[in-house]
Amino acid sequence: MPEPPAMPCTAFAGSRRIAAGPLAEVVLAVKAALEAGVPGPVLTFADATGRVVDLDTRGTAGEVLARLAGPEPADPAVRGRGRPKLGVVAREVTLLPRHWDWLNSQPGGASVALRKLVEAARHASAGRDGVRHAQEAAYAFMAAMAGDAPAYEEALRALFAQDRPQFELRTGAWPPDVRDHARRLAGPVFQ
Image 1: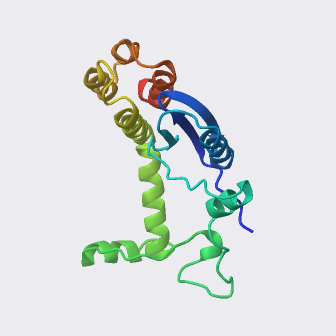
Image 2: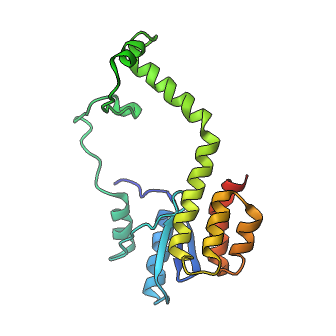
């Protein structure tokens, strides 16, 4: 049986944080909270994206975890294109003829050259990408949990302006658990 994903998540009942950690642990905490009749809507967020994770907490803990893990893996004898054991996936790329000519003239051919170009671009933009991902995650969480909080728009402006003092000032009056989680998600934006 496949393992449930270990994706870090945080769950809230209303504006109170009720669980944080790997998805498998959080879903069981959410199930227990719902069964105990916790007040307020219960929302679970993926920490990496700030987006709501839909959870199905019906049934026993084992059934809930089995649904999280997903279906059994496909028969390994059935193979797709590429090198699936290495994580290589074949997809279509459209380029101009001069681009294909240049790629094909590179040592190792087009695939090796494309992988090297992508890795170089990833390394060159890692800092900017990290900031952008943190801004997007904080924004998604804030929109869901703090959209009607005081100074919400000002906090968003500070987030995207990378202005930590203003962000902290504008989130200061928010419910503590929501404020602290928004600040944690936004942390990489201000480094």
